[in-house]
Image (cartoon, rainbow, N blue to C red; front, side, top):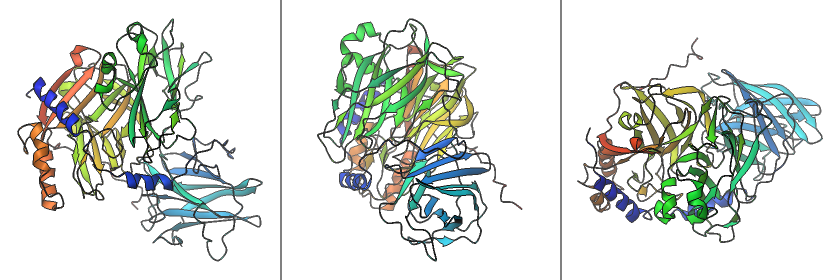
Amino acid sequence: MATLKLPVLVVLLAVCLVHATDSIDHISQLIKERQARSTRSVQIPKPTPTRHFEHYVRLDTTGQFWLFWTANATHVTFETHVNTHGYIGFGISPNGKMFPADVIVGGVKDGQTYFKDYHTTEHAPPVVDQSQDWFLIAGKETASGTVLTFVRKLNTCDTVGDMVITDDTTRIIYAYNPDDVTSFIPYHGATRRGTKSVMLLSSSLTAEDVNFPQDIVTYDLVHNNHHVPSNTTAYSCRAMKLPPLTSKHHMIKYEPVITQGNELNVHHAVVYRCDKRAAELDKYDGTVFPCENTNTAPEPLRGCLYKAIIAWAIGGEAFYFPPSAGYSLGTDADPDFLVMQTHYDNPLGRSDIVDSSGFRITITPTLRLHDSALLTIGIGVTPMQIIPPLELDFVSQGYCPAELLGKGLPQEGINAFAILQHSHLLGKEIMTRLYRNGSELEPLAVDRHYDFDYQDMRYLSRERKIYPDDKIEVKCVYDSSNRQGLTLGGFSTHEEMCEAFIMYYPRTPLDICQSVPLYNTIADNAQKVFPVIKTWNWTDPAVRANFRSALDHSVHYHYAMGSTDAVNAHTTTTEPPTKHPYVKPPDTRCQH
């Protein structure tokens, strides 16, 4: 395997700078989407469920509709609390729309419950399923509304209208009405309906699950009345030193702290560590600077901006570390100076947004068994990630090969326990794949219904071993059918990314392992690629197929970076598909 000389990396960086603002302008589309959303969420205490549920979510911004649920290997039990004495509509949909959808309608009328399983055949009132596969457990009316408890199999085996509940992102649809169902279902109206993305089968942890000790303390890593630029997309960084610690601590929880009213503007945030000590960087404490790329950062802080320790995106909730691991702070080997990068999404171009969002971390001197860390993988954020227009299922892939992974991982491997997968508006599917000895194993994570507005650090169903001889791939599928020109990789919302952040233990010196395609079958160096492809007629399917072939056969530039020189390396190779792909075991639940 040949190595790529440093001048090639310099060329790649030059291409990135030249094309960093060369992207498709879809601001009008973003404005329409943003205006269709609620403008402000209100913190309303959740109702008390009738039993213990592992998960809950407020489906609307005003607290009219709450959902509780618990899942096991075969079923999901739901409970809805809705501020109505009329009917309740609830269901799942692949696209968040009324059609197609698998729904129930129920309520309590004159002291009697009613409840039926429906599905939709068009954007019209649903029709009753011949096979009733949602089952009512209990229903009641209270002074504050209606409560329904019901259950459904993950796979009902009903192929007419029912949908299989998987561990992908699930789009919940809901509706309600002050009137009950009679001989027909009254129209819910425009304001008593909505959609919300959740992960129904994701495992979760709470303070009780991880046995929170009594000696915890919290610390806020937040902006301080930051005036957000009026740019439609902005990346703002704030440097900050941690409070002094006299002994080793573990961070065992982090949670987003979002300024009220800015919930739709704070898109994602990442906290990076600095290897330089706070004593050396003290004068930068509190410094705020634009950070779309490292060139805008103060020079001593530029080395911080790839060493992620916390990652969060819109829709994410508090994250609890598992009982066996925490992120180490307080020793000479631990960071004491951080940089928080925040991506602001501002499609209306507002100049009046003042933000103090960030994170609240919980730390304790009661130590866990292992020190955890975060590994960033996928495609490097660069315009060399190119997505043609007019494509329903265009695939981009980023790799971390064994040649680089092995430089940072111990022979006994690491244990992955959680993952956050990330792309932008065109993303429709993301998969993080694992290869060993030439064969693909069960993926670390698969999300076939990716939602840009719902990205969360999700726990793996079980801890997964990753060894130094393994290869990791992040595969992103994009829908560019409504774009008329090229979409390039980049930081703005209407550019694209394809990344995954893997939580694991024990901590290693490896921080990032990514790749970039070079399109060597199109041009003999990266600088010549864009002049060539800008002359192509992208409305021609044959041209797009030719580009797909060029990407499939491209050499990829792989690079790894970390806290020691031993892991800083790069190499080039092609990435042919495996001859032994993973085959998911057949679902035998519907075999009779």
